[in-house]
Image (tube, rainbow, N blue to C red; front, side):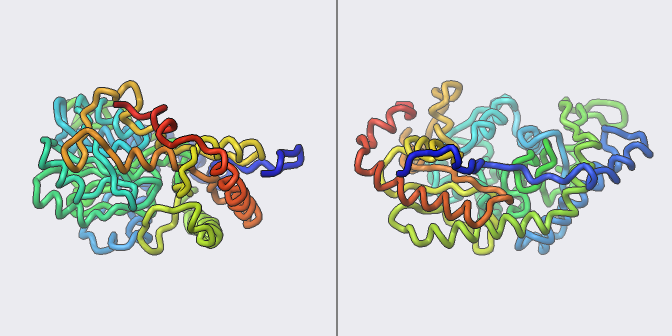
Length: 402
C-alpha cells in the first residue's frame, strides 16, 4: 500500500446533510411570530405529520396501514425508552435484544428498569430475526423484544407482527438509522433517531412510528412528564422536542427527495465497485430498493478490521468499527444474560462478524472518484494484511467476554 502523502485528500466517514440557515429561516420566523418555543408547539405537530407522511410515501407497505402516527421526542434513545414505557415494559421486565448493536439499545432498556437479555444475530442479515427469537424463547423467558434495523437495513415487520400474534410479546424495532426505509407494522412499533448524521437529521431528535394512535398519544404525554389536564397519572420524563429542532426538521422535509437521491447514488457507486470484489468483502442482505444509510463491509479474509482501518487512516480515509465490541463485551453488560439459539451463552454469528466488520465512508457528499479511491485502497490493503495477519483467535480474545 502506498505511503501517505501530504497531498492525500481526507475522506471523512460521515458528513451531516442538514438545511442551510436560509432554508430554516422561514420556520424560525414562524416561531418568532407565534412565541411558542417548546411543549408541543405547532411546528412539532407539523413535523410529526410530515414524518408520518414521508413514511407512507417512501416505505413499501406503509400505505396499506389504516393508521400511522409519528410522535417526536428529544432524541433517539429517549424514543426507545418512552416507547417501551408506553408499551407497558416496566421495571423487572426482560427484554430480548441483539448483542450486535450500538450500546444505546441496551442502555435504554436499563433506563426503564428492565433487564436486557442478549441474543445472537442472523449471519446473513446481521440482525435478530423472529426465527432466532423463537429459538431463544425455548430456553428463557422474556417480556418484550427489541430487534435492531442494523445500519438502517429495514427489518420485516410483518414477520414480527406474526411473532407477536403467536407469542403475545410486544415488539419495538430500534431503527435509529432507518427513517425513510423502515415502517411500523400493525402491532410492531418503530423508533428512529433524527441525529445530525442520520438519514433525516435535524441536529438532535427522535421519533416513534406506530399504527397505534393511543400509543403515540401516550408517548407524547410521557415525554412531557406524564401530564394530562394538569395532572400526572403516570410518571414520565422531560423529552420534549423544541420548536427550533422542528424548524430544522420542516426545512429538512423540503430537501428529503434530494437527500435520498444523493445517498442512493453514492450507494450505487459503492455497490457497483464492491461487486467486483466478491472474494474480499460482503454486505448484509437488504430488501431490493433499500436506500442505505451506512456502508459496513464484512471482510472475507481473516484479518483484523482494526488493522485495515489503521491502514486507511494513514492515507486520510476515515473508517469506523460499527457495533464493535458487541454489547456483552462492554463492562456495564459483562454480566448480562446471553442466550444463543441453542440455549447456551455463545453468540457465534455476533462473535464472528464483529472482528471482521468495517464501516467505510458514506455520506451524501462523496464523489465517484472518492468512492473509487476508498475501494481501490481496500483492494490494495487487504492482500497485504492477509500476508502478515495474526491468528484470528487472538484478535477475538481482545473483546469477547467469556
